[in-house]
Length: 248
Ligand code: NAD
Ligand code: ZN
Image (cartoon, rainbow, N blue to C red; front, side):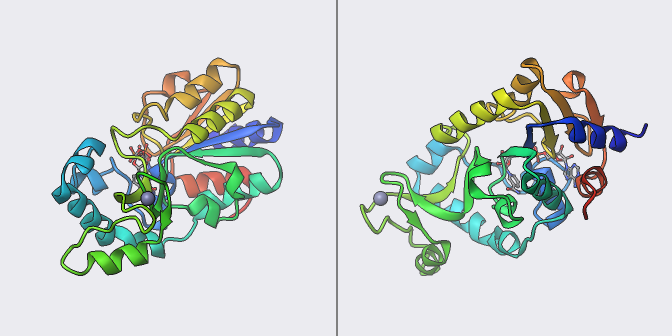
């Protein structure tokens, strides 16, 4: 049996599937990942949360980067990989997607908001670090475009940042709690497009496997978790998932 047929069979037999997704599921939508050749890290070193807080120049640099890449993210549309997961969600088999992505493409593919657990936040809007109030990026850009003026919260004057979780920033509690819940109940965990090196996010598939779920990894290249997986498919996510789920 081919690896894809085996994945198909595991999906058919599963009752409660959880997907764990990383930047790799969105490369086929034109959003570069971090660690592939040509990925974001070959261009930018990430800005740590403490540096963002401490330095106005770092905050400016972070908005510069955001607006340099925002057009790509806004133009991106869900691809075959996102659509295959959306179909599984529609069928009721996919309980949740735990994602490290910040691009909103799972929701755009039709998966209901309450089934998408965003561990690293969302880069399609900004939020106040003090009171949490949401601010739209178009508004931030208008202000920033005038001499790189740093935007302030409309409600409390606090520092605004894209609603993402930076290195060194606390993980979102509610999302972590939900991710634990769905992981405990999963009978099939599928990791798609993650190098599985960013923790604590990468601990969810390990936990699912320990608790008895079947574990599948679909990724272009090997990962550190290959040895604990029941099935590893080193191939493109879109083609693999369309075949395994029977959609395109
Ligand atoms: P990563 O860049 O570390 O790893 C991506 C993995 O996906 C790589 O191993 C790569 O070989 C594989 N891959 C890329 N395209 C693929 C494809 N079409 N088919 C199969 N495999 C493919 O990404 P990560 O593990 O998600 O960690 C990066 C961090 O950066 C995350 O925490 C995330 O928050 C953030 N990030 C998000 C986005 C996004 O939202 N789209 C983009 C870049 C970075
Ligand atoms: Zn505020």
